[in-house]
Every structure is written in structure tokens, then in C-alpha cells.
Length: 404
Ligand SMILES: C[S@@+](CC[C@H](N)C(=O)[O-])C[C@H]1O[C@@H](n2cnc3c(N)ncnc32)[C@H](O)[C@@H]1O
Image 1: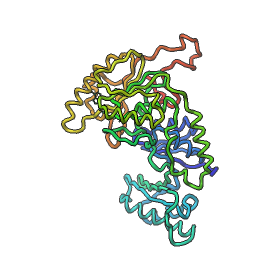
Image 2: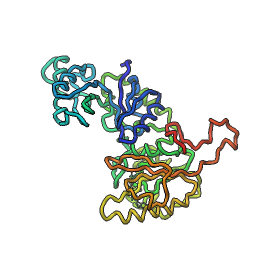
Image 3: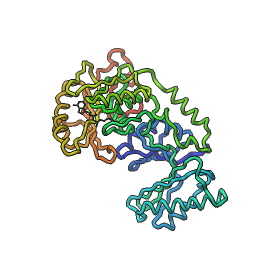
Image 4: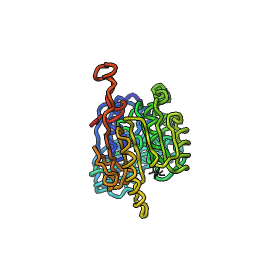
């Protein structure tokens, strides 16, 4: 598998630029971005490396074909024309998922059925025999129609990439790990700065920050469906895992803090941190927001408070947002980052954000409010380093370069 492959990292809406940046940092420079997709060309090793390292992507898929499809005949013929046998072995299982946006072929179940039939016909003809028992490795096919153009892909990830393997216990309204990682990637936090999530629930944001701060590849403890494909040399996966292990940095110099007033949430957060291998980098404690204080300067608060969507919760959430305004005002050198779907947030928090970014938490439209503190004093002045070397507030290598 030396040839270059046409790949797509799928993302939640709003995270495309974050994922594009991560892909570039992995050494794959050219990409095109459309809604929920970052497309790029790379060799087979990229499948191992991207699955292991991408923090904010949902899945990594291989593009098998792309063509106009305005009727089922066209969809069937064009699907069958592709060399599926080069990917799917005689025993391979190939479930078909689908979606259709602004296209004449709008019945997704019908599109899935047609694509399945076309691939079955092709594989029967090429592998021989009448029966495909589908007992082997999985090749998840997706037919995606957009403006009457069909894109056929094969999923290399298996379980979606937010499933890192550390969170087996679910608390109240947990964030997806991919979104939590994106919140940190979009901030100016780096391992030299203090970090607090005062409403941490089961700990997803602090744990993702710790993984990032230690440069631990988020996929290191899980498996990917393409690991079982005969097309890829197992050595390529071993090499990618070894590379990822070599990149891990030592314990964080400043412990990340996660607080929540619920004892149960904190107990789960501790379990998750142990499972993620960052228990020594994060300190979780049961503490109500009102008691949050810090003598540290230039830290970052990144948090995902309750949104108050449920009737009856609204009043409590309004009080909480006012309290956040009062408590965070004491952290006057800190940068603050808050994700919420509640459109009254800035009014209640009593501060106007320096930047807002639209993100989706599952299907809920949210805003990521960013309030920038002053730049930390430059270490440059102290040690006379050249201007590009140290001291900028801009964060680690995978962070978005958007300092105010
Ligand atoms: C939306 S959840 C956070 C979910 C978290 N990001 C996760 O991934 O698990 C909000 C959390 O705020 C906590 N919370 C609400 N009011 C609080 C308060 N006054 N002090 C501390 N924690 C509070 C809740 O217990 C809940 O766990």
C-alpha cells in the first residue's frame, strides 16, 4: 500500500479548521475544507498516524469514488464500476451507512440498499462464488450525497474517534472527548500555565488538556478497524504506536484542576483520569464554584457549564452564570473560555466576550465565549532569548494561531 490515498477526516460542524491544523501538524500540508470534512492526500502510514493522533476529528475515511448521481441507475452503475475487491476481501463485512443533503436521491435507506447491491454484485463477480458470508474484518461503507454528487468512502476508524477508551462511566451531559479537546486546542493554554475547569463533571476537559499537555496520542489505548485489514502491514501500526509513545512528554509541571460540587461526578472523573493514564497530572476535588480561588496568575479556565435547556433549570443556571461572573472576576489575569448554548450567557456573566465561535455539542448549537486575559510577562526579557524562541502567550504546537 505505497500509493497515495484520498482521505477525509470527518468532524463536527465548527471543528474543521481545528482538525485541518492538526493534520498539518502531522505533516500533511495540503487539504481542502468543506462542512464537516477535511480532505487530504497521504500514504497508508497516515491512516495509522491520523487515527492515533487526531484529537478533534470524528473519523478517518478513505474516498473510493465520487461521481454525479441523480437517479438510482447512475448510483448503481457508478458504484459497481469501482474496484471494491481491491479493498474488501471475500469474507469482509461491509455495512453501508448513508446520508443525503440537497439531492434528488433523498431516500437514504434506498441509497444504502442500491450501494450494497452494487458492491455485492461486484464482489461476487470478482471474488467468485454466490455467497458473501461477511464474517471477516469490517469495511464500513458510507454513501454520502451532496448536491447530487455521491461520495463513497470506507471507514478506517471503527468506533468514532471520541471513544478513546478511558470513559466507560457516563455522568450528566458529558462532552464528547473530541469537542473537549477542541476547546483546549482553541485556547492559549499550554503546559506551563495553570488550568481549572470549575464545573468539570466527569472530567473530560481536564483529561483532554492533560493528554494534550503531555502529548499523549488520544488513540494510543484503543484499536481501529483498519488494523484488521490485510491491506496494511501490521508493522506500520506498530511503528505508528512506537512513534506516539516516543513523543510522550513527562508529567505536567503544574497540575490541572477539575472541580465539581457533585461527589459522584468527581469520583467518575478520577476513574477516567486513571484509565487515561493522567491521574498524576490532574487533581479533582469536590468544590462548589463559589469557593474557587487561585493565587496563580495567567491561568486558563475552560469550562462547559449546564445550559439550562430543561424547563425549571433556567433560574438555577441564571444564578450560576451570575456567580461565574463574580468568581471569575477575581482571576483578573486569567483567560476564560466558556461553552454554552444559553444565549443569555454574556448578559448574566456581565462581560462581553473578546471572541465567539459557533460550535455544536451533539446537535445543539453552542457558542464558545473567549475572554482573554493579559499576556503573561515575556520570559524573553529575563533571559534575552531571540524573539521567536519563547515567551509568547501562543500555546503549544497544535494550538490555533489566533492570539488577540
Ligand atoms: C454540563 S456538566 C459538565 C460536563 C463535563 N464537561 C463532562 O464532560 O462531564 C456541568 C457540571 O456543572 C456542575 N455544577 C453545576 N453547578 C455547580 C456549582 N455551583 N459548583 C460546582 N459545580 C457545579 C454539575 O454538577 C455538572 O457536573
